[in-house]
Length: 218
Image (tube, rainbow, N blue to C red; front, top):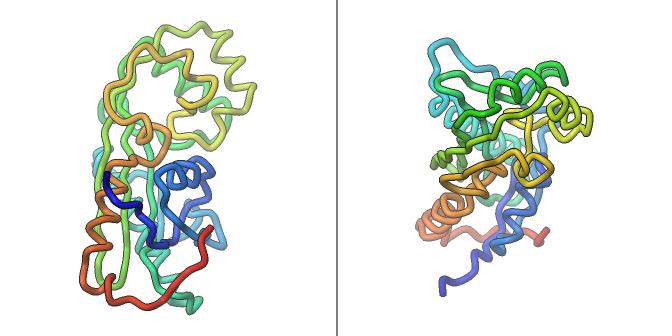
């Protein structure tokens, strides 16, 4: 059995789901929150760029979040430790579904996904000093056909709010899913295999082994 990932890190995310997933694999962390939401931070634009593929989009945003988190760590003069960030998007072909702006848009997203197979992409990035490493998890999810009343009820529940693709697979939307191929944790918002690989590579690096700063566990 692999040793526990017991080095402390910073998690640059407001997502309670990502906190739960990190704790699930025994990673100690402290939250490193942006003063403003990332979407409103000029350094971390979550708006897709013209011609950007879904893969390029999530990798860019995750890496930008991790890099911005590292800069904030330095600005606040916090003990140095790797900064972990992630970003998730849903893609139907090359069309990127980010977080819905409102519930009308959420309903439109769910109607587009109903009865079809789509991709859920989550990129994870780790920043420490001059190093910025990242990895990508891509999973396939197939939804059954959804009645308009089902979409209306789901949107009214509020579970669609602040979720890429307007749904949470770990919640009520699980009953919409016919099949998953890939990483369940990646679909939820943090692919644990890829995250563990990044942390292990960073922990093995000479600059990380020589670091003396310590953090109290979360």
